[in-house]
Image (cartoon, rainbow, N blue to C red):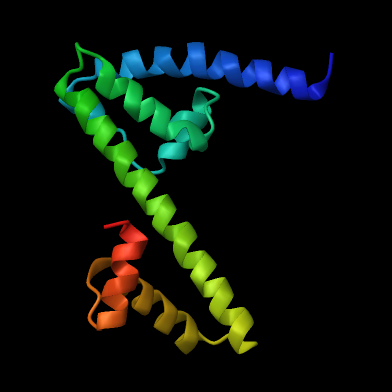
Length: 140
């Protein structure tokens, strides 16, 4: 019995039992219940023993539930916002880390420039080169 096997079995149990059960529960939530499902989303997941990396699976299973109520759809929307926010945060951190390594110094101005530049790039590129990179980034 190895630690790796135990980890694999635990993940399998989580993804085939715990997460589907929680998804069925969330899918039945009312609008009022769903309004309480706010940040940090991780606290809701961790309370059930679910790692945040599984929030996409949880959202997917909620949306597959044919009896999903309005509250369940609201929770699925919140999970999507959380996933997108975490993804953009990780992209921004990577770009910021690359910029700081390249410039060999850290300043508030530089951080602000990278943050604003990244958000502008993601939301609305302006230059022709940015548009090409934008399309590549979003795989358009």
